[in-house]
Length: 567
Image (tube, rainbow, N blue to C red; front, side):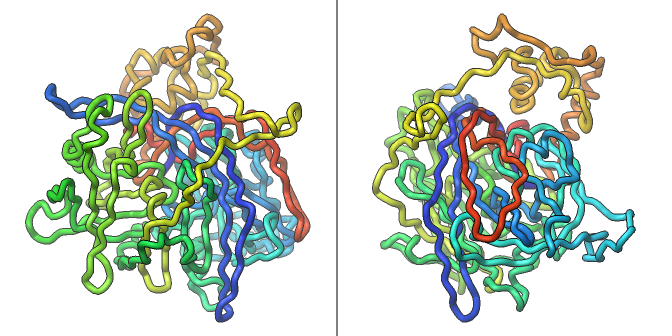
């Protein structure tokens, strides 16, 4: 996910498996609703406070969620768990050519096992000829991680392993042949299913939404996303080929917002335009600050845990909200209104109450809005992420070039704590408490390519522990004093060689290289956490109609888009 994603935290994941999928057929076009699984973790985010003493920033915990589901690739089908992300433009899957542990811990695509697989030499769809060795590859950086993929084409189906019904489409995708250890080795899913527009894709034929616009597609180029309210007894889902009216609140209807097609296609994001943000009825003039009727662009991103804008805009918004340190004024905090352009000259008021944009904990309140400095080519753009998309059922329509938003109809029944199966208790035990990790400095992996960062002692001495929190938590827990007191005396170093001597400028250059693409991609955030996740997946080749069972085992979870450094 080019935009994206992750910080830290440690929470056991809450696995949520939907139990049903729906398939309908209308005028020869099909739609399919795919249940989504969730992993919930906790991250620390900066929060801007306001008081009589002035502005200051503190860090607060915030829950973030990964949403992923099953796809089947090839014939016979090979099953994969993938994150569905409207802020990313490529389908990315590990292949059997990637032999490192980082790949072998996930399911890997086997082209030789699929009768419908096509090897591509170049991004223009040129087929790789027998005996040809020259071929292009694409490298993508996701925050602090990097991968390289070859070009492939195969059928992609929804429904295998879930129901007897299925819908398929053919698409080009990136088959990973090499990837960095961090963060990919710790991800609980196998790949990324980009649902962004062509500007974020390797080429037009690699864009799944574009594929759906073709006449031979079984589905309309429409995707709808329903995200579960975190305390509600319901399941998240994604629908391909249409949207479900039953997901819209009884007190609302679908509101359609036009997409500036050419600009959206060029930038790759699902964009709508915004006139301004209102707090207590007062316009903040965050878009039309020069009185010329200018608009802000807004990207709706299912892969982003947070909502973001420029540091200036977020600072102005948080100042207008007036959040106090311990959230004592929660009951008097204002609602926020985002005035978006609708169809036929109308406007749509996207309204958030304090409970929609804040999360309350014993430490205080954490805001779902965070600052992010975007590249100049993206202009004055906001990113609205999962906290908004939980309240609003969202429809992404590339046939009519519009986005639909409606207040989602959530269950009023509260969800009890989910139970996780273990071999000892047969699934009756509650979610196990997180087991503390060893107090470790991992100099060895920190110094490896592609980024060649310094040893942890140098990293800490230069003051980077707090500036680059994901790297600190992953590599330098001891030197950055991130260990529990009981573990401090057991600190060890995994350095294979003495730490390299590097200047502050060299370190900054290395870290910048590790995060530059995330800034250019411009979007979401979250954190790294340790969770109880699905057991390590072996390479799986299943026959049509076969199901797959998911067990439980101890494993880390790190969000794919690591933007903590920028926050």
